[in-house]
Image (cartoon, rainbow, N blue to C red; front, side, top):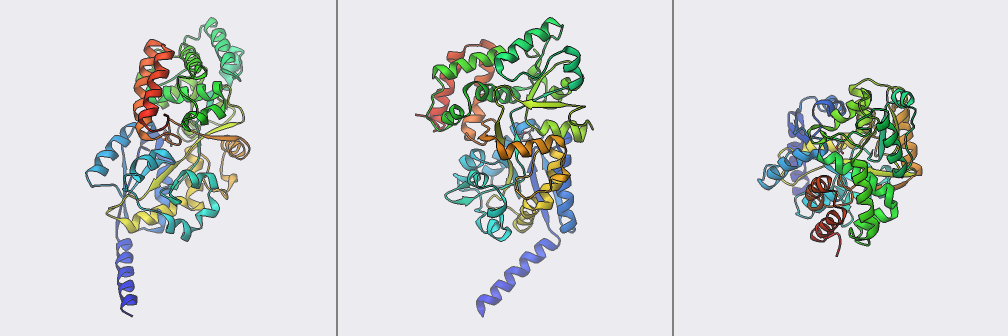
Amino acid sequence: MKKALLLAAALAVTTSASAAGKLEIFSWWSGDEGPALEALIKLYKQKYPSVTVDNATVSGGAGTNAKAVLKTRMLGGTPPDSFQAHAGQELIGTWVVAGRMEDLSSLFKSEGWDKVFPKDLVKLISQGGKPWSVPVNVHRSNVMWYNPAKLKAWGVTAPKTWPEFLKTCSTLKAKGVAAPLVVGENWTQQHLWESVMIGTLGSANWENLWAGKLKFTDPKVVGAFTTFGKVMDCANKDASGLSWQQASDRIIDGTSAFNVMGDWAAGYFTTTKKLAPNTGFGWAPAPGTTKTFVMLADSFGLPKGAKDRAEALNWLKVLGSKAGQDAFNPLKGSIAARTDSDLSKYNTYSKSAAADWKSNKIVGSMVHGAVAPESFTSAFGAIIDQFVASKNSAAAAAAAQQLAVRAGISK
Ligand code: GAL
């Protein structure tokens, strides 16, 4: 009886908290990256109209700035109620191992999520058999974007291998295209590096690198660094000053022919720029990665000590729901993490990504947190910067190997 009363009292507290509560969501989806998250918040507000939502964002692609701010808040004991983190090692290797996150097992159970999220994805967000975040999407990292009308005018097609890319690069340079490839700030160069590695080494070797079974100093990997250097020779010289959106713009305006970027670029082209897939923008797997889907997923977790825990749990429910995922993803360029999403709501690009997600070999992205811990990814940028300046493959490979050992990836 006493237990029942206590339970009733606890429920009353939860209900009154949700009746007029607050919720702070923390992410890097601001400005051009904002519309998909805003659609999700709108859905949450329809369900919980009296909750005031603080959409706290720290802008900067790939979360480079947001992750630094999050760290101060987590360590300072003022965590947001729920925050964006990549599914996989990015969250597991930092805040989960540090004991700062809540186990979401009972939420997964009550929402039936074990059955609607793909098994491998649940494995990626789990540690010790427990899930630690809720995936809202699946993004593809290995996509090469282009402007179909421009490629036609130049008389070239999207290259299928990196050696073929280098030939196409020479052809385009001879036609007066100064930078056939456009890249942006450091993380976008790492993003390109990832596609060059996988396209050169193959997906099995890529997996071996992160499993500690292939060393960065292996001649194969050193050779792939050299290829990356040649690919960078095809790129614009003002890369470090460009955001990923500004790099995407150069494809649309025809300054450059190709850009390797995740399919948030599809969201940018369709949602922000109002371009149609296949005519306004074109795409192909990054060279050498046909039939490989390099995945990453954005997810949200519940930090211990969240001020508005009940609201945060409801937020997680909305973002893991079918309606939530089908409101968010068609605007974001990603596909739903759930297997039961309504594909009729998605455009031609996303339908093709959904088909590839089912049929391709799936490997995880390093740059976007799936396969390597934050201790590796946050320090790898300096190696890329140094390599781009020196083009010294052996030195870059040796530095990456040392970092992999420090991060516990390799021996
Ligand atoms: C990725 C993230 C995407 C997108 C992109 C550009 O790391 O997973 O959702 O936001 O960065 O900022």
